[in-house]
Amino acid sequence: STGTGVVQCAPGLPKVSRDRLQRIYEELKSIPSSGGGYREAFVGAVRQLAPFFKGKRALVYGSLANPVPEVATLALAGASHVTSVEHRPVCITDPRITSVATEDFWRRALDAPAKHRFDAAVSFSVLQHDGLGRYGDVVNPDGDLDAMNELWSLLTPGGILVLGIPVGNDCVVFNTHRVYGRRRLPLLLRGWSVVEARGLPASDAAAGKLFAQGGCPSDHVVTLVLRRTVPNTHEEEWKRVPGLHGVFPVHA
Image (cartoon, rainbow, N blue to C red; front, top):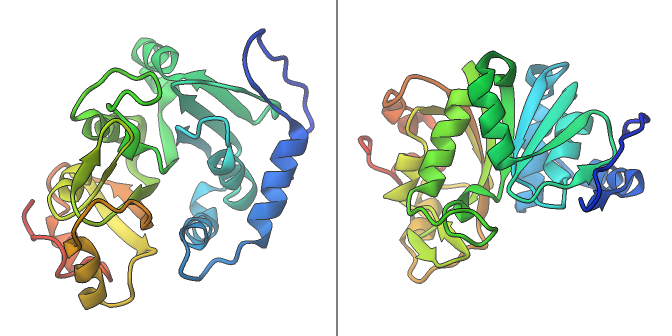
């Protein structure tokens, strides 16, 4: 359930009410942990990671004014507190959630890095927008790669990231989103070990067709469970992840 403390909102900040948080929680509870949809993939991954998240401080990177990842991290995974980092922060009326503007967060992290390290993080359907300027961020062709490096630096060694991104044929639709395929996805995951991939086709052959299709479809969102590791040591992991085996080159 949602928290019961009182949060004072700064003037001008959009407010996410406790009632809305409760509605999100009720909806998340009703979603099964298995199935072919992106919501089932995300919810199933978060529920499965509850033993790891339980009682820990977690980071949510970007959710705009729809705090589904924050509520899932608290209510389904059992985190004790969530720091939500967003280009356009909102006031979330639950004392267990702190919403911080991206620029302010990085300034604080540089000033006091030990206080801004996390054991777990969640980022769902956000990275594909970074660096394209859609949400007021600075245009940077490698904004998504830079964001992943920043997330890597914020997690403790062995820390877990739940990442939701669209996959298929490599492409960019400026200024809205990227789709990750054989070329870009290994770059995005450099420094991470893939623990699990949810939402991919069941067979390697079907996954291969997904990544080989033409055009720039962005509707196939997968949830990847990643573990922070030493940069460039993840390549062999591709061989052992169902749905990814045979799709990507062993060496990125």
